[in-house]
Amino acid sequence: MSDFEAHDDAHLASAARNGDRAAFEALVTLHKATLYRIARRYVGQSDDAYDIVQDTFVAAWLSLSRFDASQAFGPWIRTILLNKCRDVSRRHAVRRKLMHWFGLSDPDSAAVELPDTDRETHDGSDVRLAALDRAIATLPPRLKEPLVLTALQGMSHRDAAAQLGLTTKAVELRVHRARRKLLELLQHAES
Image 1 (cartoon, helix red, strand yellow):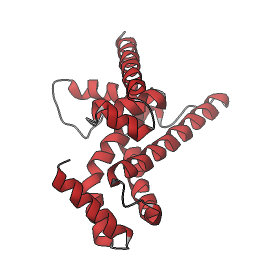
Image 2 (tube, rainbow, N blue to C red):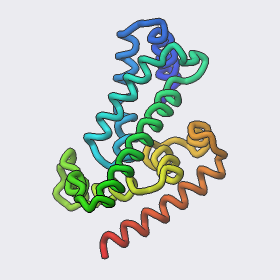
Image 3 (tube, rainbow, N blue to C red):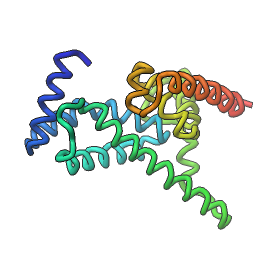
Image 4 (cartoon, rainbow, N blue to C red):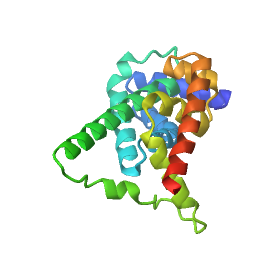
């Protein structure tokens, strides 16, 4: 983000905090694509990602009075998003366990196995990308979050560490472990 965009972001966040709906709508426009990409990689399903992003913006609007205008809006909204992603992941895990315990099949499992139809490629990369999305979605949050923020969103390890409340070294280690685990998952899926 350029200095101009960061300044504009701070101005918009301050105006939104004071009740300016147009300023908040501008913040939504500025951040929705980034938040969607993070959520999509986190949960592995586009429908869930859209819902999470919407829930994130609703929660942000309702929490604007607690937003510290001296802080950057981007990390604040990403924190809300990551919390929403964690909530959805926990609900899905509980649902899968309950379905398994009662011997029922998960009606959503077939949908997860389909490639993402948002992309139209003809060289097989859409299938590989869908497999990668599913593999990322299965990572535990402590590995998934640093990976999504750094490798997929382009944040520096230092910025991701600040976002997640970790040390830079911890982020580096978790990204390394996440990549190694992804490689294992993808190789296992191919065999």
